[in-house]
Length: 91
Image (cartoon, rainbow, N blue to C red):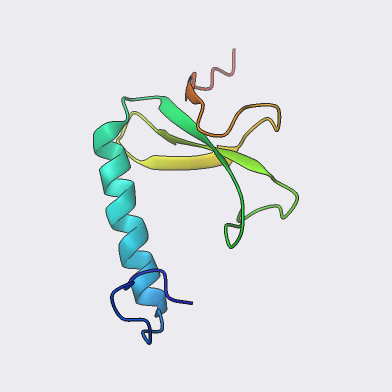
């Protein structure tokens, strides 16, 4: 597939292209999202969740160290819905 170079219809993506694009996009999200702010994403097409093929939606959010985290979301949430993630409190 060609997801990274639409101006060249004969281009075949390499794993490095995907990694580079993902890291740049994660950096952009890190600049847009506030700490513990996230967005619900419905998984479609080539999108796969790394832990469970049955997962249909994920929340993409920024943690307090600026990293972009992807976690399973409740299937009842709407695609594109903004949300706040509360830090885990074992107590």
